[in-house]
Length: 129
Image (cartoon, rainbow, N blue to C red; front, side, top):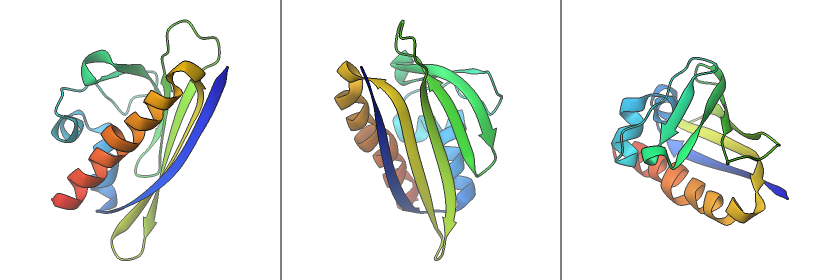
């Protein structure tokens, strides 16, 4: 069985910096502490946390949207993470995440990862700058 996860965060950051935190491998390394393989190119493979998270970039709209397929072994249904960026007043950026078809056995770990190690780490990184 599969589950979906949806969340939203707001960060005090420029749109360019918030977007780079998800797509620029150098910026990802700064907040994650690990080398990252990431590209804006559609159909390019990505790898984070020394291969703990791998997948393929499906679509990128600069400073608007990133769509990725995350790999979970041999599952049939594609697990899709869609990250959308919305400018807010006062120099804030709203980031909406929808991650679909997460394998049930991985769901709690993925949600914790998004909240603590991915989105949480990006928010901390961007707001400390």
